[in-house]
Amino acid sequence: MKPYLVFLLLLLPIFSFSQKNVTAKTILKQEAKEIKEIKKFQKELNEEYLNPKETPLRGDNFTHFKKHPFFPVDLKYRVKAKFVKTENPVPFDFPTSSGKTKSYQEFGKATFELDGKPYTLTVYQSLDLMKMEKYKDHLFLPFRDATNGKETYGGGKYLDLKIPAGDSIILDFNQSYHPYCAYNAYDYNCPIVPEENKLPVEIRAGVMYQDIYHH
Picture: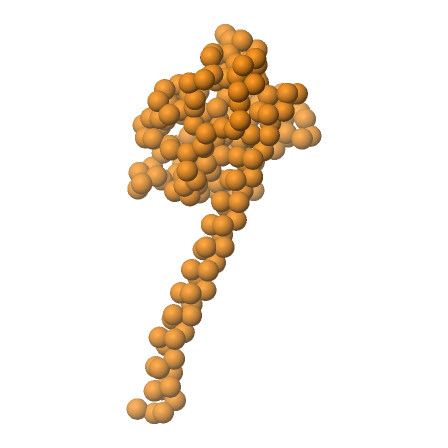
């Protein structure tokens, strides 16, 4: 065997190890960035509920509030979903907890895998918010899962999204939260999660629920 071939063969394991090391570092860096985003969401949500001008909490619920309980951050629940935009959506009246309705339209379907099984959720767009510059790219994902009524609010949870540029969208359930009605059903009317967005699995991510809230 020629000397330069022997040299190349000796280098292969080193090169392979180096590539794996770089890949591992890249993954860890990306995960650290994602966890930082989740922690930022948690901090901002707590600040909102501690702010008397923004909080939905009233009376003793506000007085006793310190911070939200959250499930431990788990990137398993941050999934990349295939996104199919709904063509020619028809506006409809979204039923709410107060019996009134809000104007929405279906924006698309997000299909993802969790523990090897596929699930699809419908994503919506508020006709009122889309007229506002600040929220013109805002999407709304209400969902229910097997934790509702136990560790999370019985009526389900919400996830805020932005219009994706391509045919995929990130669903980070670590940033899911309860509707205001979970804490104050008297002053708010919240969209009711449609049956098609009920997941038969536990989504152990995002905000948990406490029994101190009287609704």
